[in-house]
Length: 321
Image (cartoon, rainbow, N blue to C red):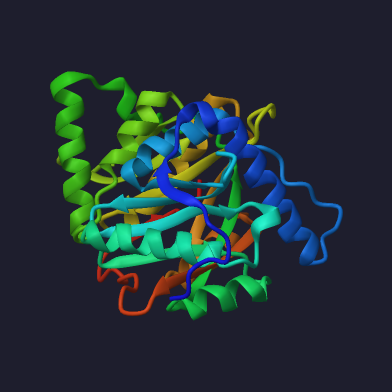
């Protein structure tokens, strides 16, 4: 692969005190991307700093940045390892440095990080209308998979079934629940491990993990949710589902109902769920119950490192913040 036409230092770790600079690079670059796609009036706002802290911690050694000669952030890539499931995002090149080979360098570094970590799924998501991005990732070995369709459902009634929150458990009870969550995940998607994201969510106070159990008391499904505004300075509008796993499809309606109650408890008016296109019937069912389609993203995976489709149950794994 050809080297970038400018010299940058990196990759280097991202420091949490650099979040304002990170946010500025993010906002400027994505606003320009929308402008080039014809949406000239769109300005992408800065993200909630506490979510940046969560994302940097969740990515660990995969939170990488590159700097220009003045030491300013020129680009960054957060490469996430969830067991053997690996994904990248956000990844951004500063607006004035785009088209100079920097993007190739940061994506290549992310792929290397995920390969070294033993990931057998490596992917990312991009806007499906952005031909430049799709072509760019295709040249780096990525192939299109399916759409991820974001839908929202109205918050539930406070009189609905009370959600069991992982944050309500401490010590041995929480450790036991985490063990059961890991076992449930492995039954549906062997090798995936969402413990780091769950623990980071609880540590930073940005959300919770809602658990459902079978009649015998064992965990049969869970959803990792964030309950803070995505955008800096905004009020909370929706509870966002980052990960959702159920052992059997029949468990999903009860979990969704509890998520609606959790949204109401958090003061949100709706629940946002990102449905991967591997489950076409799930979209039909959600829309039939009143869900509204809000957004689409194109899922792409590195050739030879595609995302497996479960033979049982459902797993919805968000590859975005």
